[in-house]
Length: 136
Image (cartoon, rainbow, N blue to C red):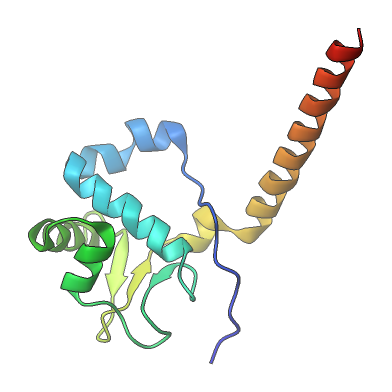
């Protein structure tokens, strides 16, 4: 059994790459909804980067469609496309567990910790500036 990591409250999305990159070109708008829901589910998972009910059991298509609030047909179409050799954004194993490919590359904790500290510092600077403006 692996050590549980805390669930993520946020995931990183690269704005330019999301708007103008391969994801936008490869997936239809409704399929992108499934992709973004999958990223969120993988971040909220007990096993980051994987979509699963337990460490060794995945969701059924119906359960996942209900979680994502999309029709089962859309979920299946999007997952097939995301799993295809040409797109290769997910892998599914025999237990129904979905792995997000390159999760660590895009969601590494090192970069996440850096951004968390950056945002804390930024908010602190903003509060200090507001206080200075108020005092003037």
